[in-house]
Image: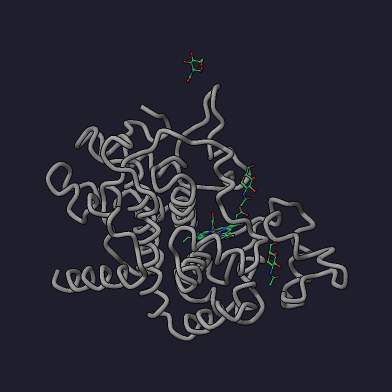
Length: 322
Ligand code: HEM
Ligand SMILES: *[C@@H]1O[C@H](CO)[C@@H](O)[C@H](O)[C@H]1NC(C)=O
Ligand SMILES: *[C@@H]1O[C@H](CO)[C@@H](O)[C@H](O)[C@H]1NC(C)=O
Ligand SMILES: CC(=O)N[C@H]1CO[C@H](CO)[C@@H](O)[C@@H]1O
């Protein structure tokens, strides 16, 4: 308990150092559901643990879901909304088609609604599930403030705000800084690619007709390129692990990037730009440092444009606006 308290204190200090917009945070709190739904976090945790026992690869899905939720319209559960006759939702954009883990969120929401109806937002459940998935996979444990309200808008065209895998470090730095992230945050968050897979469609830009002088991206380890070219002959939907331990949350991703084995352009570019390169080295050398910076960057990500009060609602079914 005491350790937790110290950790919280440390995170707040870290957040202030990183210049988080603390003014927009005041309504969120660690104890937000303490009175109205004290078991909310436990329900989510149990549901996530159970789902991951059956399918460990879902940890990656749940982490990525939170990232996509927060980068499009803020962390407001908009990523969960199903398309209707009138509206094509974020979910149905090409970027989001490979998102996974929606059933886990539905299941947690159902348990929570039975216990304390109309209290816990889908956005908070997504944030908790991502946190619990990281821990389950061997990553750090950390507290997140709660009290996000659910949004009412989910439009396919808004997913343009997601970073594309072909972006270089300069563009990524610019894009992430719009949300208040430092260069260090960008590299720590990219460490989320310690979990999961990508489809060939996401990195085939590196495997042929790369530029005027190269057929294959010269920043890719050539043995790896040969293997990938072969694997991707079976189609755009073939999946390849983002690092060598796709179900373990560790710092293997940074070792991969160091040895020219980052899978996406957006991964390998972090070793080519002098502003990001040092952080790749730091995290490759020191996993504890990565964990610490990842958790503070995740707390920060979870606060992007959060909706409070009447700006949002507590959705009753995470897939449908009330
Ligand atoms: C830096 C900019 C980023 C870009 C360009 C990017 C892009 C991508 C792409 C293209 C994929 C593969 C999708 C597919 O082919 O199906 C992917 C997967 C993934 N991303 Fe990112 N991502 C970024 C940042 C992040 C962040 C900040 C996180 C979380 C902290 C994250 C977590 C994940 C995870 C866990 C997967 C694996 C998903 C799975 O196995 O289902 N990514 N990302
Ligand atoms: C779709 O739009 C029409 C007209 O704007 C409206 O009457 C209807 O209720 C909408 N349906 C849904 C499912 O939102
Ligand atoms: C990064 O990408 C942007 C946008 O495509 C481009 O203008 C810029 O020249 C690129 N920077 C480097 C260092 O390649
Ligand atoms: C990262 C990525 O692939 N983003 C795409 C998401 O979907 C929109 C709409 O189809 C595209 O414009 C983005 O490029």
